[in-house]
Length: 508
Ligand code: FAD
Image 1 (cartoon, rainbow, N blue to C red):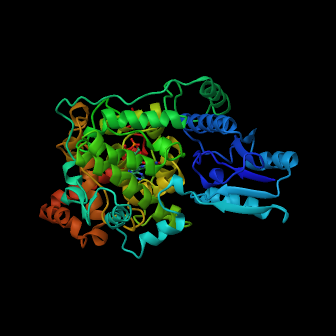
Image 2: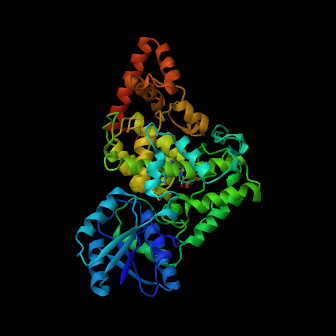
Image 3: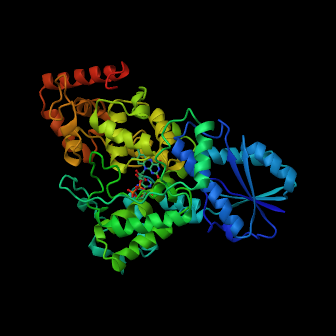
């Protein structure tokens, strides 16, 4: 008898593990483990999503004729012991795992199995576009470039191509996708799903068993089934894709989603495959007259960034989790858990995370990542926070995005320059500064925006590392133009700001 073990972020009916299964012979094992060693201090909504989606998926499998051994247990080990006693399998199959910690747990577990049980690991391809080997091999030799990776995938998959040329004459329309959203654009609200009985049961369990975890549950609205995720994709394309491109980098008070799709929570657990999302969005170009800058911009996120991040993770783990080339070792402030900070842009970026376990890319990168980088917060503490607080967080996607993209803690393996910004960028791309006690134009006064002095302090502090970087020449030229007294005053102000943060200031 064969056991086919499905994990909570592998909920796809198209997995080879399932398409090659025999419902009459094989048993599907699913384990809802609640031990502290299995779960970090995840946001409550993340736990509800995973447990509810697992329970719904198990129901669907039963409807498809499978026998499902669904176990609520303290740990994977406990569940396996019970499962083995009941079914005595001779063959165990599971789908390849990307996350290194989980992969190691499974390897260790396999080593304890009796020799009478054979183990096979199946391809995870519908969860990603490339197999693990293909992803690493496409990454090729360093220096790596996301653009190169993305172009290759566009060519290989004949996506948005006109013969051998990119559709519209350009590989990327990124330059058209940086408009601030200050002119009263009508951003349509994303679809929200009402919790059914299964989800309500899980909410109760999480409120009881994980009461001390961060986050709120009264507004849980995430898709928990494939059917719901498909409706979310269709609604996104119908109502919100057209403005996705243009306002991709915008931030607006009270507008938590703008035109972002909110599909990452579904794609990352298998409810939607990246391939079907890309194909459906590409079809909207003709079927629904969607603008090319929106379609290309969206497809680049999944075909390009998502696959690229996973490839970097696979090629660098283990070890990548420890990178800290800029030697940043300060503590993440407490207000990251309650959102109560006097810095308006930071408060507005934290609020949706606490309320809904999500905020959009520019808030993650240019506000929270920027904050951590400029205040010299430990990359590991920052990554842990991202890992625990987001509905779509998994080790493989958090580490490259946080350590590589946002914090440059890998020394530029993943992107050529650090994404740092002074208040000027945040003011340009948002309406936050108008409603902030700090002055976005000032660097030195008592109420000066902390990002200004800290930005120049970062430039000065890391001169040796970045002055020769062609993408940073302009910054160093500007810094050099300042007189010595001005430079000293900025550095001194930055030192004071870092101490103030350590002393609990900026907490409301
Ligand atoms: P949209 O803006 O609608 O984008 C469409 C899709 O593209 C997303 O659903 C996602 O699948 C994909 N995508 C876009 N950018 C990236 C990227 N950089 N890496 C991987 N996939 C991408 N994404 C996660 O899925 N999980 C995370 O834990 C996560 N942590 C992040 C942390 C930081 C510091 C940064 C800068 C980015 C992080 N991202 C993460 C990437 C990105 O911000 C999210 O995928 C996106 O905000 C999810 O919301 P959405 O579905 O509305 O995305």
